[in-house]
Image (cartoon, rainbow, N blue to C red; front, side):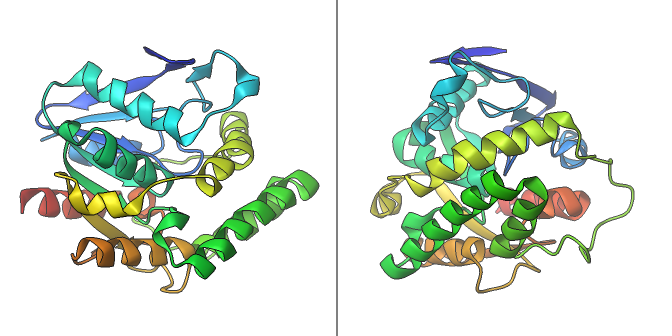
Length: 269
């Protein structure tokens, strides 16, 4: 456990080798990528954590919620606790936005950031940015009015996820929608959607970071959706190629073996 400003953050460390921090998407806590961690731990010290407000990371004042700045500060302190050298980071979706902030605010802590489909409206042209922020706000309204099942459908459509015909590798660890995950989704939709919509990331500053930022996208993510568009705009901003990963938006959980291989390939170049 790690004490940070206004919260106690739970984290786990697995394996040996260079430090690789994974910052999860959605309601994902430290356990979300257990299969991926298992494939990476042979040659990396893999750090995973529960974002504040999720699972075992408890807010001092639950009514206050959490801002993007809070989430970034947590990762800053977490990395300082586990290593005094620049680490690699895999940021997925919301976690990728945290990584982009860290690359600007604390570049000395990161060597490489793989930013997989960052949900960062500020990366988009103005009209598109307004439209996608409105989507997030409408999904919050839908969740409050009709509950998680209907919100799931809307979120899947927004992010280009096909929950019915989703291709996966065999032998995945089951992740049932239990009470802990339901509580995580509640906090994520009510709180973190707002953090995304109100995010003030100055994307122009990413051009000057010393961190190697690798924009990434899922092979099966539709090219027109919010998350894929953000990855492509990030690549254009940095003047680099966006790199393809196995699976779609949640390829880190649906294709952990192939995803781990892709991470190793990119970190080795």
